[in-house]
Length: 214
Image 1 (spheres, rainbow, N blue to C red):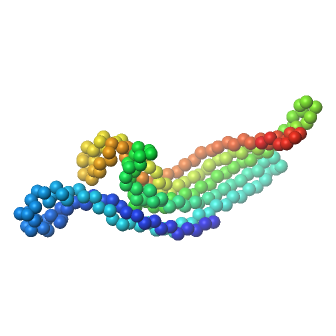
Image 2 (cartoon, helix red, strand yellow):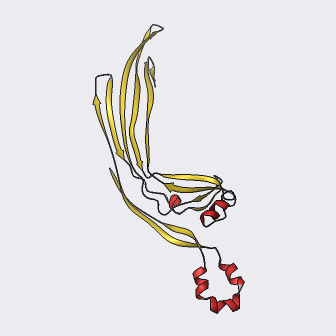
Image 3 (cartoon, rainbow, N blue to C red):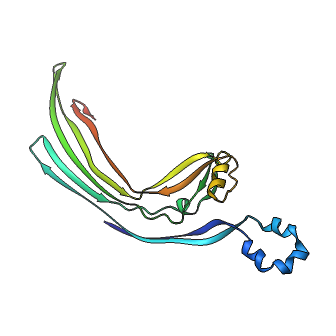
Protein backbone atom coordinates (compact mmCIF):
# COMPACT_ATOMS: atom_id res chain seq x y z
CA UNK A 1 0.00 0.00 0.00
CA UNK A 2 1.12 3.54 -0.69
CA UNK A 3 -0.22 7.02 0.01
CA UNK A 4 1.07 10.15 -1.73
CA UNK A 5 0.30 13.84 -1.55
CA UNK A 6 1.25 15.48 -4.85
CA UNK A 7 1.52 19.18 -5.61
CA UNK A 8 2.61 20.68 -8.92
CA UNK A 9 2.96 24.37 -9.74
CA UNK A 10 3.41 25.96 -13.12
CA UNK A 11 2.05 28.45 -15.61
CA UNK A 12 -0.74 28.20 -18.17
CA UNK A 13 -0.47 30.14 -21.42
CA UNK A 14 -3.62 31.92 -22.57
CA UNK A 15 -4.32 34.20 -25.48
CA UNK A 16 -5.32 37.57 -24.03
CA UNK A 17 -7.49 39.96 -26.02
CA UNK A 18 -7.72 43.66 -25.23
CA UNK A 19 -11.37 44.08 -26.25
CA UNK A 20 -12.57 45.11 -22.80
CA UNK A 21 -9.54 47.29 -22.21
CA UNK A 22 -10.07 49.06 -25.50
CA UNK A 23 -13.76 49.74 -24.75
CA UNK A 24 -12.99 51.26 -21.34
CA UNK A 25 -10.30 53.54 -22.72
CA UNK A 26 -11.68 54.14 -26.19
CA UNK A 27 -12.42 57.83 -25.71
CA UNK A 28 -9.15 58.42 -23.88
CA UNK A 29 -6.77 56.76 -26.35
CA UNK A 30 -8.41 56.88 -29.76
CA UNK A 31 -7.02 60.29 -30.65
CA UNK A 32 -3.53 59.52 -29.33
CA UNK A 33 -2.96 55.96 -30.53
CA UNK A 34 -5.50 55.22 -33.22
CA UNK A 35 -5.07 51.93 -35.01
CA UNK A 36 -1.56 51.37 -33.62
CA UNK A 37 -3.03 50.54 -30.21
CA UNK A 38 -5.11 47.67 -31.62
CA UNK A 39 -2.21 46.21 -33.56
CA UNK A 40 0.15 46.28 -30.58
CA UNK A 41 -2.15 44.51 -28.11
CA UNK A 42 -4.25 42.13 -30.18
CA UNK A 43 -3.54 38.44 -29.48
CA UNK A 44 -1.07 38.93 -26.64
CA UNK A 45 0.07 35.70 -24.92
CA UNK A 46 -0.35 35.85 -21.13
CA UNK A 47 1.06 33.29 -18.66
CA UNK A 48 -1.11 32.75 -15.59
CA UNK A 49 0.08 30.80 -12.51
CA UNK A 50 -1.71 27.49 -11.94
CA UNK A 51 -1.38 24.57 -9.55
CA UNK A 52 -2.41 20.91 -9.19
CA UNK A 53 -2.87 19.11 -5.88
CA UNK A 54 -4.21 15.66 -5.06
CA UNK A 55 -3.92 12.84 -2.53
CA UNK A 56 -3.62 9.39 -4.08
CA UNK A 57 -3.76 5.90 -2.62
CA UNK A 58 -2.37 2.75 -4.26
CA UNK A 59 -2.64 -0.88 -3.18
CA UNK A 60 -1.97 -4.34 -4.60
CA UNK A 61 -2.57 -7.91 -3.39
CA UNK A 62 -2.20 -11.43 -4.78
CA UNK A 63 -3.93 -14.64 -3.71
CA UNK A 64 -2.41 -17.97 -4.76
CA UNK A 65 -3.69 -21.51 -4.40
CA UNK A 66 -1.86 -24.72 -5.32
CA UNK A 67 -4.13 -27.05 -7.27
CA UNK A 68 -1.61 -29.90 -7.17
CA UNK A 69 2.17 -30.32 -7.31
CA UNK A 70 2.25 -29.23 -10.95
CA UNK A 71 -0.31 -26.43 -11.11
CA UNK A 72 -1.32 -23.36 -9.18
CA UNK A 73 -3.84 -20.58 -9.61
CA UNK A 74 -3.36 -16.96 -8.58
CA UNK A 75 -5.53 -13.86 -8.58
CA UNK A 76 -3.98 -10.41 -8.49
CA UNK A 77 -5.86 -7.22 -7.67
CA UNK A 78 -4.30 -3.76 -7.91
CA UNK A 79 -5.24 -0.12 -7.87
CA UNK A 80 -2.24 2.09 -8.65
CA UNK A 81 -3.05 5.78 -9.03
CA UNK A 82 -1.02 8.07 -11.28
CA UNK A 83 -1.12 11.85 -11.11
CA UNK A 84 -0.57 13.88 -14.28
CA UNK A 85 3.00 15.03 -14.78
CA UNK A 86 4.10 18.64 -15.06
CA UNK A 87 4.48 18.21 -18.81
CA UNK A 88 0.94 16.85 -19.17
CA UNK A 89 -0.43 19.76 -17.15
CA UNK A 90 1.58 22.80 -18.18
CA UNK A 91 3.35 21.97 -21.46
CA UNK A 92 2.71 24.50 -24.20
CA UNK A 93 5.52 24.64 -26.71
CA UNK A 94 7.77 22.89 -29.18
CA UNK A 95 9.22 19.44 -28.50
CA UNK A 96 11.96 19.36 -31.11
CA UNK A 97 13.06 15.78 -30.35
CA UNK A 98 9.66 14.47 -31.51
CA UNK A 99 8.93 17.30 -33.99
CA UNK A 100 5.71 18.10 -32.19
CA UNK A 101 4.05 21.07 -30.58
CA UNK A 102 2.70 19.71 -27.28
CA UNK A 103 -0.14 21.29 -25.34
CA UNK A 104 -0.98 20.26 -21.77
CA UNK A 105 -4.29 20.51 -19.93
CA UNK A 106 -4.55 21.87 -16.39
CA UNK A 107 -7.97 20.19 -15.97
CA UNK A 108 -6.50 16.64 -16.16
CA UNK A 109 -7.41 14.40 -13.22
CA UNK A 110 -5.59 11.54 -11.49
CA UNK A 111 -5.68 8.15 -13.20
CA UNK A 112 -7.30 5.59 -10.90
CA UNK A 113 -7.06 2.17 -12.59
CA UNK A 114 -8.51 -1.04 -11.13
CA UNK A 115 -6.75 -4.14 -12.43
CA UNK A 116 -7.50 -7.83 -11.90
CA UNK A 117 -5.34 -10.62 -13.35
CA UNK A 118 -6.11 -14.35 -13.17
CA UNK A 119 -3.05 -16.54 -13.72
CA UNK A 120 -2.65 -20.31 -14.17
CA UNK A 121 0.88 -21.62 -13.57
CA UNK A 122 1.88 -25.10 -14.81
CA UNK A 123 5.19 -26.74 -13.82
CA UNK A 124 6.27 -29.73 -15.89
CA UNK A 125 9.33 -31.82 -15.02
CA UNK A 126 11.26 -33.19 -17.98
CA UNK A 127 14.02 -35.77 -18.20
CA UNK A 128 16.55 -35.99 -21.03
CA UNK A 129 18.92 -38.94 -21.50
CA UNK A 130 21.88 -37.96 -23.65
CA UNK A 131 25.54 -38.99 -23.83
CA UNK A 132 25.19 -41.40 -20.87
CA UNK A 133 24.05 -38.63 -18.55
CA UNK A 134 20.62 -37.92 -17.19
CA UNK A 135 19.57 -34.29 -17.43
CA UNK A 136 16.54 -33.17 -15.51
CA UNK A 137 14.82 -29.85 -15.26
CA UNK A 138 11.50 -28.10 -15.09
CA UNK A 139 9.46 -26.07 -17.53
CA UNK A 140 7.22 -23.38 -16.14
CA UNK A 141 4.30 -22.23 -18.26
CA UNK A 142 2.34 -19.22 -17.11
CA UNK A 143 -1.01 -18.42 -18.71
CA UNK A 144 -2.42 -15.07 -17.62
CA UNK A 145 -5.92 -13.86 -18.35
CA UNK A 146 -6.37 -10.14 -17.88
CA UNK A 147 -10.01 -10.54 -17.02
CA UNK A 148 -10.57 -6.85 -16.32
CA UNK A 149 -8.23 -3.94 -16.52
CA UNK A 150 -10.32 -0.82 -16.15
CA UNK A 151 -8.44 2.46 -16.16
CA UNK A 152 -10.45 5.41 -14.93
CA UNK A 153 -9.69 8.44 -17.10
CA UNK A 154 -6.25 7.48 -18.47
CA UNK A 155 -4.17 10.33 -19.88
CA UNK A 156 -3.19 10.01 -23.52
CA UNK A 157 -1.62 12.22 -26.14
CA UNK A 158 -3.71 12.98 -29.21
CA UNK A 159 -1.76 13.99 -32.31
CA UNK A 160 -3.29 15.77 -35.28
CA UNK A 161 -1.96 17.20 -38.51
CA UNK A 162 0.20 20.28 -38.64
CA UNK A 163 -1.16 23.58 -37.52
CA UNK A 164 -1.27 24.84 -41.12
CA UNK A 165 -3.63 22.02 -42.09
CA UNK A 166 -5.90 22.77 -39.12
CA UNK A 167 -5.85 26.56 -39.36
CA UNK A 168 -9.18 26.68 -41.18
CA UNK A 169 -10.71 24.15 -38.76
CA UNK A 170 -9.82 26.35 -35.78
CA UNK A 171 -11.34 29.35 -37.51
CA UNK A 172 -14.63 27.52 -38.14
CA UNK A 173 -14.97 26.60 -34.47
CA UNK A 174 -13.96 30.02 -33.23
CA UNK A 175 -10.89 28.64 -31.46
CA UNK A 176 -7.81 30.70 -30.75
CA UNK A 177 -5.06 29.82 -33.17
CA UNK A 178 -1.45 29.64 -32.01
CA UNK A 179 1.38 29.38 -34.50
CA UNK A 180 2.87 25.88 -34.13
CA UNK A 181 5.61 26.41 -36.68
CA UNK A 182 4.30 23.63 -38.94
CA UNK A 183 4.90 20.96 -36.26
CA UNK A 184 2.45 18.16 -35.49
CA UNK A 185 0.03 19.29 -32.79
CA UNK A 186 -0.15 16.92 -29.79
CA UNK A 187 -2.67 17.62 -27.05
CA UNK A 188 -2.89 15.76 -23.74
CA UNK A 189 -6.43 14.53 -23.18
CA UNK A 190 -8.33 12.13 -20.92
CA UNK A 191 -11.32 9.79 -20.98
CA UNK A 192 -12.44 6.47 -19.47
CA UNK A 193 -11.16 3.26 -21.04
CA UNK A 194 -11.37 -0.49 -20.43
CA UNK A 195 -8.85 -3.12 -21.55
CA UNK A 196 -9.07 -6.93 -21.62
CA UNK A 197 -6.60 -9.49 -22.91
CA UNK A 198 -4.35 -12.45 -22.18
CA UNK A 199 -0.70 -13.45 -22.34
CA UNK A 200 1.29 -16.70 -22.27
CA UNK A 201 4.79 -16.91 -20.79
CA UNK A 202 7.01 -20.00 -20.98
CA UNK A 203 10.23 -20.40 -19.02
CA UNK A 204 12.53 -23.42 -18.78
CA UNK A 205 15.20 -24.38 -16.25
CA UNK A 206 17.44 -27.31 -17.16
CA UNK A 207 19.95 -28.79 -14.73
CA UNK A 208 23.18 -29.75 -16.47
CA UNK A 209 26.11 -31.75 -15.04
CA UNK A 210 28.17 -28.56 -14.61
CA UNK A 211 25.49 -26.01 -13.93
CA UNK A 212 22.02 -24.84 -14.68
CA UNK A 213 20.51 -23.43 -17.86
CA UNK A 214 17.58 -21.02 -17.67
